[in-house]
Length: 230
Image (cartoon, rainbow, N blue to C red; front, side):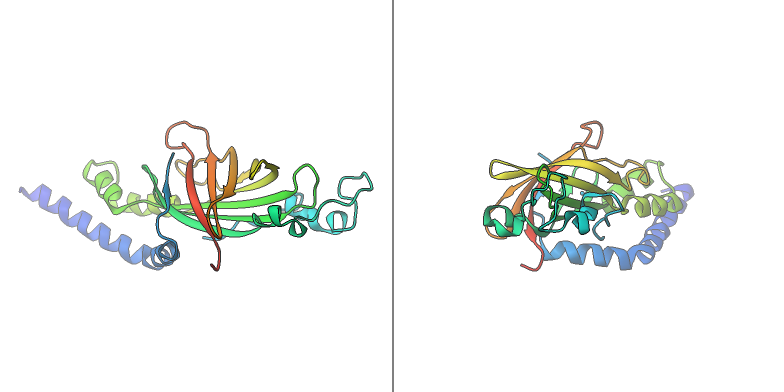
């Protein structure tokens, strides 16, 4: 091994140490959450997105409260919690998986009563991925990234992408339309969600199938999520 190779190896060793120190708190929180629900699915993505004014969740105010007319027809919108067949979808769900070329990903989904006849379900999803160390090493050895670039790449890739959803029952599942994607432009290879469906899967679990652009890394995926707290 010549001097240049030794220097390059030392530089990357130092870079990995810096990455470890810089990301240790975030990675510990990320993988501690994932460890609670081991990898459950694969391709067939920190906190939940908040609902901005005008989103489905904001319809649960005075105009969308039970007993009022949310659709202007004078009819009382249904309350999902009163129907066991629909109430089983409500709640907070989470799980983790490995997605090709995107690393280990943590997926969260919150489903709420939207008090709307056409789209009685409101959904809020969050997908956050951490690149694997093998991916970072490959980028470094191939000359694609410097240690500083690697830190910047990892920081951006761990930012979550979120979606605001509106759903309706379809057979024994719920099909969601995506009303807004959040955080996609902030990622170097961000993937916006185009649709999502959930179906019952065993006890306190749901099977999730979500679609993306189907181009490049954005192939969507499937995962089984467990209800939070179970």
